[in-house]
Structure formats: C-alpha cells, structure tokens
Image (cartoon, rainbow, N blue to C red; front, side, top):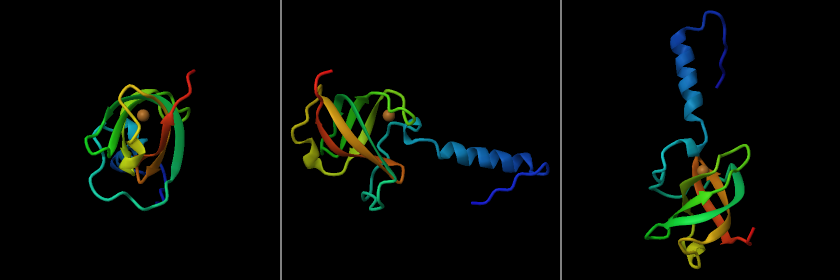
Length: 122
Ligand SMILES: [Cu+2]
C-alpha cells in the first residue's frame, strides 16, 4: 500500500488510514473470542514468542487454552487470554492451574501454541 500525505489529504482519507492502522494492532487488543474456526493457516508464522504463565482453562477438544501470561516486552502486557492449539497432543499433560512455559506463533493474526512445558519454579 502506498500512501502519500499532502496538505490536501482529506479528513475522510486520514480517518480511513487511522482505521486501518488500528485494525493492524496486535491480536491481543482484540476480543478474547477464539479467532478460530477454519483450518489452521499454513503460512509460516510471522513471529514466535516464548513466555510463561498459569493455565486458566482448556478447551473441551484441547484445541485452545486460556493462560494468564506474563508481559511479553514490546508485544503484549500481562493478561489472561486464549490461544489456539495446533495439535491437541500438546495439551496431553497440561492441567488447569499448571505453571507453564510456552511458545506461540502469530499466523495471520491468529495465535497458536506451538510448544508448552511445565515452567521451572521462579
Ligand atoms: Cu496476551
């Protein structure tokens, strides 16, 4: 997208640009509804992040997990949020209340847990 600003750029155009920028904000600032449904995007993850947190809930089909995660500097503040889970097997040994360390990827704006393991005590 090529955007040329000039003193003649109309307010309507500026509003549109502002809306587009807001829409591009990190996934977290959107709702906590699973963004899912549908196939797991096959595109390579645009980024992966590793953090730790406490498991709050696990989806019935083990295809999502809600974690109270720590701050991820430069990406997300500490919060409780749901992640999708690429492979249900990943959650085989995970229980509500566990302290976990995990890695997730951002695939087209959907966040997928890629690996998860018990976190060492702090
Ligand atoms: Cu978050």
